[in-house]
Image 1: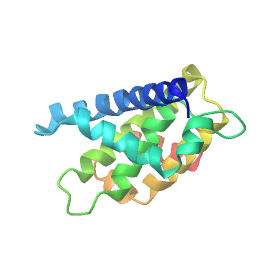
Image 2 (image 1 turned 135 degrees about the vertical axis):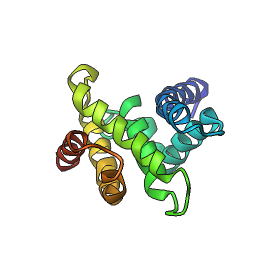
Image 3 (image 1 turned 30 degrees about the vertical axis):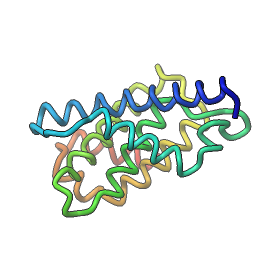
Length: 152
């Protein structure tokens, strides 16, 4: 990958990490965490990116996923990979589900493409595995929206 390709990749990772950081900052304020949300957000996105770097750099058929779908998938991966004994697991689940709900509600404004919808759908499937934990966090209205988003 050339100089401009690397710059573009770093910009896309940073843009998605900024969204993840915003969700994590909300959790920091609500729960009083003493963590570096910037470092964790970057780690979440880079970990996701490294699962399939070609897909995130070049997309499928030339269509790459955008920053919102990458952020949803990064948080979903972090939430689903967090150990059950991790004290921040439910907070990661809440952050991931909250962003998924926000993208679902505002998807018409975000101009989501096919790669975005596919990535969000896969992320929602990963979150479905931890839905029991999420049910304890959300109220009934939010849970209905979440389940509708997961089911597509």
